[in-house]
Length: 212
Image 1 (cartoon, rainbow, N blue to C red):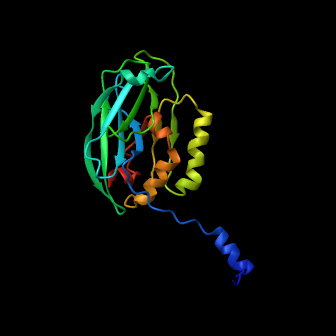
Image 2 (image 1 turned 30 degrees about the horizontal axis):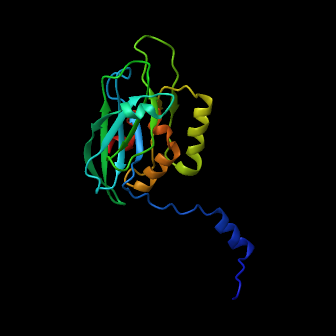
Image 3 (image 1 turned 90 degrees about the vertical axis):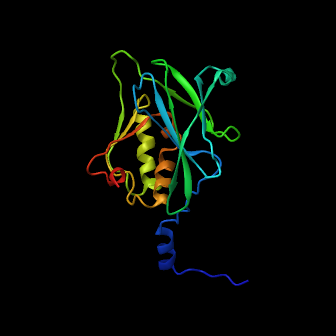
């Protein structure tokens, strides 16, 4: 077979062209898992995740974390509230569970799924019920180059502040809120950190993602 060789100029153009990003369609396995809270962070946490619409019921299990796998036998199970979100890529189920009646300053393990397909176990630690110093990470606009560049910011921030108690986002999370592929990149950049460190997105006037 014949071999084609690109001229140097064309090769340079292709080398510098951003790679195409494939849409991240929802699946049976939970993804886009985000930890946050809606009440007292010393006694509650909340988690949201995505699945395909064939997953009719979302479940979460939680237990006080232990040094071995025995903690899983003590896990209690909660049923999620589920809503449908239709995007430019596909319709998906978003499931939400609030963990209540937790103990302050305690490490918990949790996982989400449907009773057959589960995520891995994640950890979080509730806040203290007494005044004490704490740190958090503040992010401005993520917005652009989320997978290729903003991911670096997130990961370096955690290296610099490994004991951060939450992640505060005060700017544009993505550039175009209607493009699910951009949200896929945002979730990819945060990865498992989103599931273990509470994420707080503030509804500033400069944040159209939360106002649209």
